Length: 188
Image: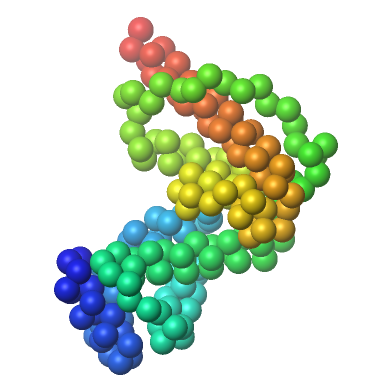
């Protein structure tokens, strides 16, 4: 979406124009569903969180301040991430490992070679990480949050965030290595 089009859309959204909200949904629902699916695995839950995100956008659009091209996308993405985090915190099965003694030791793999592996395959591997690891990994890598910020968001110690990221990265490296070994074995 070009800057001028984005600015016009924002003014129409501020006027609560129904067609503008449909345009926003059509333009961004796919990418926002992808963002939500980095945190939440179940498709129905992703759709619920996405719906809640658009409701939140509608209710809080008056607080949005247009700051140039891309600011609308950044704002709606932040809402989708926050709604995803709120959802996983409320999910009874979700567990952030807050005590270091609860985190199993995982030997750090060397940095994986990402040649010949698609982004989609890597994203699928990320989805298989335990909830807490996946959440910390996503916040650190995709949302570019510091471990201090992640700790505040999730209510854990800063060193727990760093440890969970380290372990998530190790697990992911191992998954990539196993994937590449299985691909190599297929062709032999």
